[in-house]
Image 1 (tube, each protein chain N blue to C red):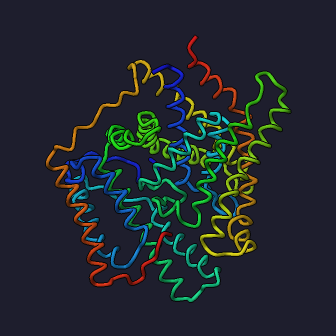
Image 2 (cartoon, each protein chain N blue to C red):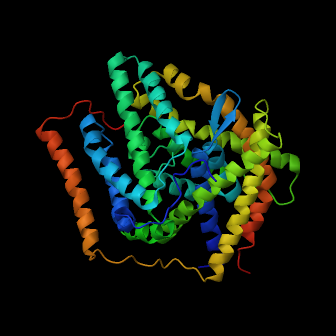
Length: 188
Length: 258
């Protein structure tokens, strides 16, 4: 097994563990406790690239499906994936993939452009979680669109914006180091 | 120490510790599928089984407590379900109350099963067991996927510990302000990602130095008699629950799928 493949496998496992651990770790942010799962889903793509991000999220979902309590708040099982919030879990796949595809700044590029690219990537990737999430919530609970948006989107907008800003700052700060880590595994 | 004890393995010699990992995995998946449609009868039938396993582990290792955070989760799940069912307009109070209670108990049972699994299973034995299942699925990179899952399970408690340490360090230095959530997340995330990178580096170096490859060690075949007996017990239990439920029409409160 090549050095690069080992590094990619390990980084995927580390991001999977980070996503799973963050779902059990509640951070009191203002009046509403925030679970940082979506932040690390987006970051797994932005820092590791599209395939490491995708692979991390799929591994995370598999761990949950076999019954380990890695979904938000320590939930697990197929019931969770097929339940009202299952669409958001599927949205994680899109988010990690989009984060990786959108955010690959040029080495030595301007810092301003990198920051703008990071912000746009984090915003689009985070928003993609709601694309399958909201219709699935509406369908599974037989809601109308207004109720579904009120229940599944509006309460999470402040947290979403905070996490998008955090993902932007963290991806901007750490991207080069993660890139170096993966590059040092490439065989000459 | 992490405040969540759910992913910490405790070595021991209880019957569940000695059970083949594959049987435990099949058991967890089967029982979580059984609880996909949850009813009072199914919960009551599973209770003595899980209680027996719990007591046997407690006797052995004397340590099966779960953090207070996870003890509060059922309450949050009950409230969330009750309110969401009330808002759908179907809302008879009794229906909402009953459904929310059943879903909460399902969460508790799944959490309980996962706790019993992780406390009695060495994470390093999970990789070959998972590979044994995944290798039959075509087009799936079974070896890599099972390696990733096994490694992740090993790393989750370390991540939880690290998150807790960073947060506590920030609090002790008065660097935590509820009025500046973004700053909190950033100052927590930066050392966390730093630690993640250091862990990834040392782990990949260790794997490389041991000439790691994807040729996973095959678990022993299912010829082991105790493995067969455990698998049989599991399926008899599930079959018994399903047949008895049908015979005595104990579908009271059966809630399907979510």
